[in-house]
Amino acid sequence: MRRGRRAAAIRVSRGGRAGRHDGWVTCKHTAELGAEPEPSTREGCEDCLRQGTRWVHLRLCLTCGHVGCCDSSPERHATGHFTATGHPVIRSFEPGESWRWCYLDEDLV
Image (tube, rainbow, N blue to C red; front, side):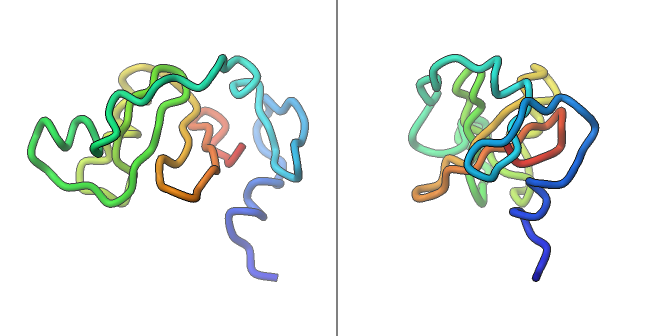
């Protein structure tokens, strides 16, 4: 079996685990989230739009609704937002994708 995101999501990591949900590991940071916030924009990465740069894929901060670009994008605004704010959990903001990532646990949740 090829190891991919699914395998990474069920590995044992450095604590913070609250349990499993539908086969995915959850963390204490997801338990601290409220209702999903309204996206700051639906047009693209808000920072790339302001700077006139390009993005590859979009991520939504589940704490405040910031829409930023992924780490495959030149500016990596989603990770920059985490570094600046400490907001730990994002989800894909791409159509048809529902995965979430916790920066603090470095895992899919």
